[in-house]
Length: 128
Image (cartoon, rainbow, N blue to C red; front, side):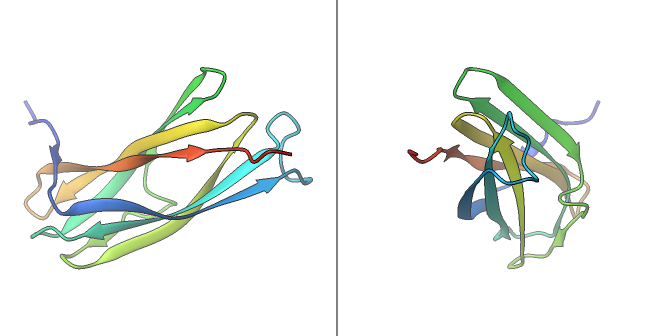
């Protein structure tokens, strides 16, 4: 039986920037608010890690909850030695304000399953 994943000390996620965009032809009319987030995963741990996937939980202002899980991070499986980091950006479209949190999961150089939490952040639609 595999052991539970370890929350690896020294592995952390930072929200670098959050950009709001409203409307446009490329956004669905029922979800006209786009939030582009820029994240950096820092490996300040004492071992190399390979990140294999992610889980996001989005709780919208109307109470609906969306869970997004999948392999890879923007199509990649970043391998981070101690002191290295991986930065990327992605987006979420919504009709309401939302709160977002989650985790990245992977393995360390010894084959142990690890994870790092994505700190909660708010997607707040500015007043019109």
